[in-house]
Amino acid sequence: MYRLLFSLVFARMDPERAHHLAFRVIRTLPAIGVGRLVERWTAPSPELAVEALGLRFPSPFGLAAGFDKDAVGVVGLGELGFGHVEVGTITAQSQPGNDRPRLFRLIADRALVNRMGFNNGGADAAAGRLSRLARRTSRPVLGVNIGKSRVTPVERATDDYVRSAKVLAPHADYLVVNVSSPNTPGLRGLQELDALAPLLEAVQRAAGRTPLLVKIAPDLDDEEVIRICELVVRLGLDGIIATNTTISRDGLVTPAADVAAIGAGGLSGAPLAARSLAVLHLIRDRVPASLCVVSVGGVETAEHVQERLDAGATLVQGYTGFIYRGPLWARQINRGLERIRRERRAAPSVA
Image (cartoon, rainbow, N blue to C red; front, side):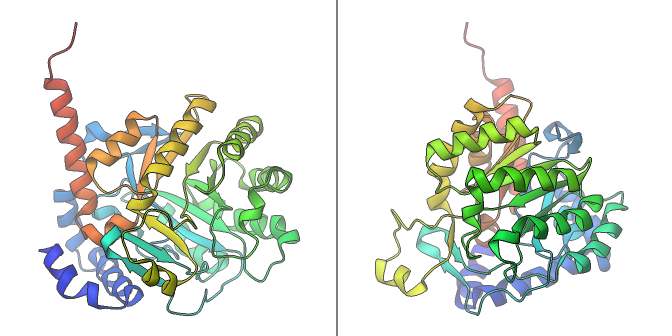
C-alpha cells in the first residue's frame, strides 16, 4: 500500500512538504492513544536488544539524525519500532536553515539530496522537550546530535559546541558531535586533527558523564579516517558514527543534467552503501572491540542491517529508507533481523 501511496501522492509532492505531512501523523500517535496499540505490533523481540554505551537498546536499528530535528516526535518514532532515535542536528542558536527548495529525491537511485542547513529551534528551545522526554519510561534510547551555528565563525566553533553540550547533554542518553555535514560552510574542516582534537576535548568536558560520539564524513580518505580513529581512542571517546552524507555524485542512475540542476547538498541513500560499509570495516579494524561504532548510509533492508552488524557495527541507523519504505520500515527491519537469526540458528553447523 505504501509503495502505491508513494508513487501516486508523495512522489508528486514537494519532498519537504511530504516530510512535514508524514511527521505530523507520527507526532499525533501518542497524543491520540493509537501509538501504544501500534507499538504492540512493531516492538522488536527482546532477542534483538543490544547493550552499548552503558544503555540497553531494544533493537540495533535506529533512526539517524535529520528526521526529527527538534525532538518533537521521539515517542511516536519509538512506537514505530526504532530502537533509538537521534534528534538534531541542534545548534546553540536557532536558525531557519538554507533557502527552499533544499530537499530532493533521486527516486531511480533510492536516494536523497539535502542542503537543509541545520534548520532547528536552537539548544535552549530543545532542552525543555528533551528534559521531559528523558523522564519518560516508555521511549526509545535518545541521542542528541549537535552542530555549529551558521552565524558562529569557524574559529569560535568550540565555544558554540560547548554551549550546546552543556545545555543538552544532561537530557541525552548519548551526545554526538557533528563535524561532517556538507551544508554548513567550514564545518567539514573541523575534521582536520588540529581543529578536531581541542574541539572534542572541550565538548567531552562539557558533556560530563554523557557518552560522547563523533560523526564523520564518507568523503574522508582512508588515512584521515584512521587518524580520527586514533584520536577517538586516545581521548577516550565512546564511539564513532560513520557516515554522514556525501558530496560525491558518482555512479548515479539519475541523469547527470537532473543531478546538476539540483545543485549542492549531501547525498544519502543507496549510492552511499559501499563507501559506508568500507569505512565501517576500516574503523573496526583500528579501534577496540569495546568502542561503539554506529554504521549509517545506504541501509534499507534487514539484510543490509545484518551485513553491518556482521562487519562489526554495534548499532545501525537509517534515514532515507524511511522515505521509500514508509512508516512500517523499522518493523520490517526488526522482523527481518529476527528471521535471519532464526535461520542461522536452524542452519546445520559445518564441522
